[in-house]
Image 1 (cartoon, rainbow, N blue to C red):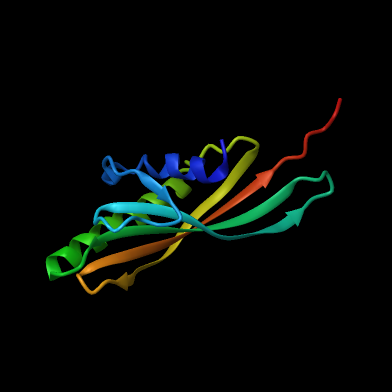
Image 2 (cartoon, one colour):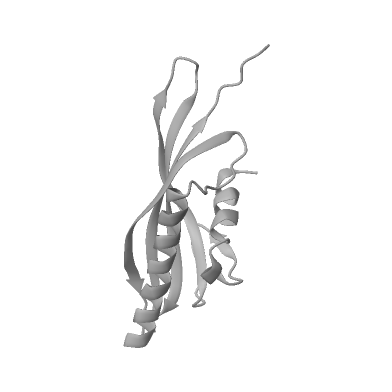
Amino acid sequence: MNIIKAIQDYLKQFEKMELRPIMTDGTDSTPGTVAVAPSGNSKTLEDICGNRTYINNYVFYAREYTISEKDRQDNYDFLDDFFEWLEDNNDKEIYPDIVGYYVENISASNVMLFDVDDDGRGTYQIQIQLKLTKRRRLNG
């Protein structure tokens, strides 16, 4: 299983995600759709044994109606709950199961309205950061 698929499966565990499919890279135009997109990664450490630690960044997008004040408040309620779920999972060390990697941390930041179309549909985002280590296989 690749990393993005593991992240999508993990995010589906959030109870308010309902039965929404989590797309890759972007939502479609339908309100109520969500997606996760990689937004860069870097190797931060390689230890003497060859284990490599990475920071992977993702953006979670939620496409929703933004026409009324109630819509916008409901959208932020969903996003704030999702943000808190990610933070609570990090505190409890509940992480995505990524084959070949040990996940050390997951964090979220920057809950915000990213874009609004002329017809009142908006895209919200949360930035997600994952710290993970790929352990070197030792022969023998």
